[in-house]
Image (cartoon, rainbow, N blue to C red):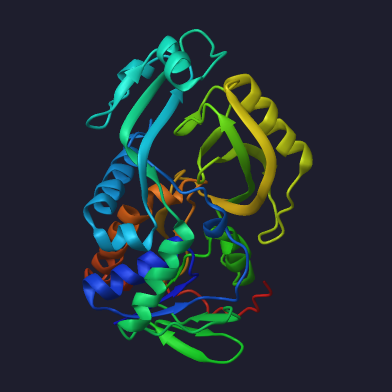
Length: 365
């Protein structure tokens, strides 16, 4: 069995690594040309708390594996620390289950201990002492290096064309310099997923939206909070080294072209305004490193493996992290690898569905 994974962001690199290291599958990982992506731009916040039960499960499993593995901690440059999640005053917030060792914080404690001010009545916090942040870019690079050491095929080059020959024929893929075959192909291409599927004429699988993610690293003094997310303002951030903070706000730049994100000054000013309102004890200095990238937002709201309709079980996507892939990637990649192999071994890809017409289109990204 051979599986081709297209895309070497943190999702694709970890999926390929799971398939090779844990299942002994022959894998080709097409890394594509070097370019800015969501993995290189990610702030890398990791925690176990989430409102959504499925995201909470994956986040908790990922964090547990990260903390238990010295290798993964080193690969990911993991920095342990507390995580503070400020909940908006919505019905049922008190019923959201907490991870082990996490505790709820009222507005007074949020103000006195962490300097979070101006919260609406009914807002509360969840303090998770054993969380922190990592480098998604470092994690994916280390996983790719390990793949090469294990003998995996890791060529550089963009996917130019793909032919799906139906249930028994597998797939043939081509780059500018080579041609290969595989039983299935998984597009872990993030924000480029929609463009890739459209280029292949498989529009039924094009359910991924794109949006710009913008944040920045600042010189900072005063009362520096731990890694945090504030639902009431959208502000998020984490320590980024001595006297430095990474801060950001969600943008509304939907439908952005992948690889073409611009850092906008007015969005940066909005971050400073939100920080001054919520964290008045934090003193922000000069902007040290602007970050802008385009990320993929899938219908599940999280990183997930999905078959592409009409591709006879030969084409899958593994994307849609919705700005939060870092904290889910370890568990999501493990379950995606197991699920993909279970699908193939059970004959799902040979289920008798009518084969699709052979498709060969030019990918221009």
